[in-house]
Length: 128
Image (cartoon, rainbow, N blue to C red):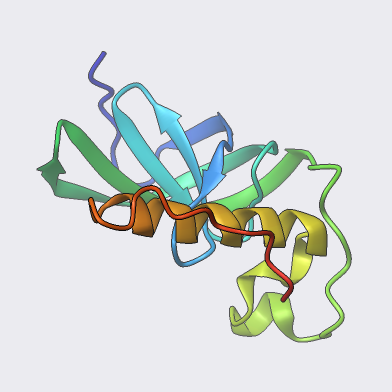
């Protein structure tokens, strides 16, 4: 299903994962939306900010502003830094540390899987 969205459109989404920059990702048909400030498992209301005209392997991407967290992830925590929400740095601060470590381990495994000689390397549990 090809989803058509426009800048400014409001959507209700269920976030599935994080991209490499720490923004949540959610699908709307074949469109992947990136939502900074949201976490996997959260249901969120967003406003579409930008829709890419480019397509990669049958997938289009868009970026959306977080308007409301309708249902928070049980992994959501209060960030230790009082300016975290305003400056945008350290996007993982609001995610529990065990969830961060699992995500980091998966990122490393995915990166290694792209190289045939390294695909079988076991990625151990992250310690930091």
